[in-house]
View (tube, rainbow, N blue to C red):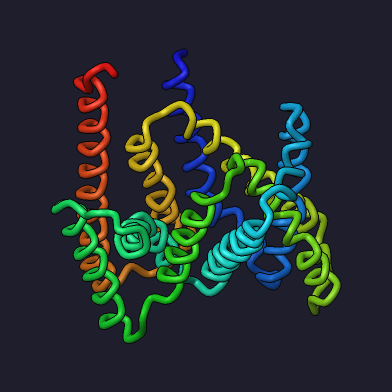
Length: 298
């Protein structure tokens, strides 16, 4: 198997695990969401540290000391990813898994808007149309449901901001997320001490699921890191949509959430926006490769 195929397989596996995570978290929906978040963060840390130890890179975590003033970015990244995880956990518990899947559909489009207004990146015609369709879908849900779909907006916004912060960190993805979990560790321990519920749930199954939530969280991130180094960015972007698609199907089929008329209007708009965005990404990367081939030698 070529490195590209290995990367593609790793990306599919990562997105499949992410897409099925709502089913896993639903098994813990009788526990407070902050408690689940704390365990998820706490038990992912040994997995990350073990992964770095196997690679002989455990000392790389110390690199955060050399970041100087930029060390604050680690704290911001930790806040964004834990806020994202909390909102996703909460969405499962309050019956908004469908809305959570919408958030991961529109996240790349929010990232495009951040790139445009924060970094002055230009949008081509397809990207602009994709953003307009995504905004139309969110407004359709807001009008049809009588409220802004805050779950989707917060999930997409925190994940997009997390990506922006990570873009400016001179650390590898696994090293940086390990550092983020170390930052959140005291908060996770405080939550477990203060939460008004049994720390380990109410059964042996709860204990196993809470501990297992760590590897279930960490493994897709490791797979994603492996894939990102082996496949084109456009391929990564397209395959990412396996995640919200499985989340959407799980919400409908497994979790039994209602699919209303407003969803039947909004989601096709999102799917069309995703198709346009993916097309633009593929065209942009293909153009960059062609330009590299014809570039004159220095």
